[in-house]
Image (cartoon, rainbow, N blue to C red; front, side):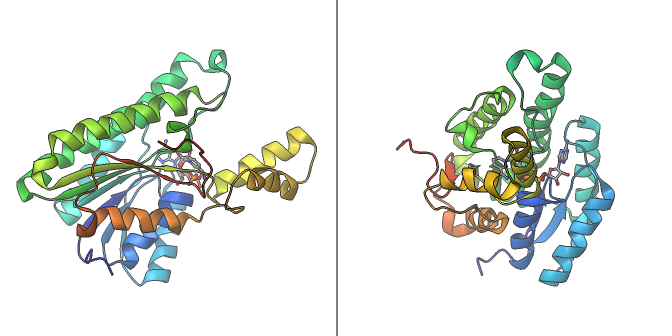
Length: 262
Ligand code: NAD
């Protein structure tokens, strides 16, 4: 155990995949976890699954990260239930993947709201309390696209890079207040989203879904996909006092996928 019992954590986009894996690990460490995502039914199912596996109560607040009013409502629900927040783990929904000219201005507005504006709103709301207490943790879940850009990933590459840079600036501004800001850049993680990608590739290439999975897997030095809980273990370490000197970093967790040494 990492000494996280009783700490209040928010994990966004947590009705499935990586967000749910993170919430599960933090709940098993004894955190009071608040999860959010767009769909209340899916969110409730996720909370029930985590409670069943960990025996810990999980709170839920539906919130569409593309809507600033939803983000503010979620924050006020968390504060009225649990008071001040110790850990803010911002995970995001899927950005549109398309050639640059097929991404509309509306797509950009919605993505800017999800990646940048929601991060700013949540951080601004939670920071003052943390600064007063002299401790707190921010962890932003981004993507391998912050390390290696990909064709058709203009939204993901540009807006996640903005989140990483924001985190770096904040890490400097708040370094003396006991608050750390770090980002995680994950590679391929076994989630419903990866399943959709495999299905899409299978259709495009006229191969089976298992063959499509295999084609991705072969490019990963570890020859396997990551598990959502493996992102959770890193998050729980970054939230612990053992990681107090890790600040302003963007950590890869990708089975060795991205080859650049720095
Ligand atoms: P997933 O589809 O399993 O889960 C996505 C979660 O985001 C769900 O809970 C969904 O309800 C929620 N969500 C979607 N849009 C939302 C919105 N507008 N507001 C609030 N919640 C919203 O996907 P995942 O694989 O867990 O991916 C999580 C994040 O990690 C995404 O940003 C994804 O692009 C990124 N990512 C995933 C992988 C991977 O291999 N799985 C790799 C790199 C980056």
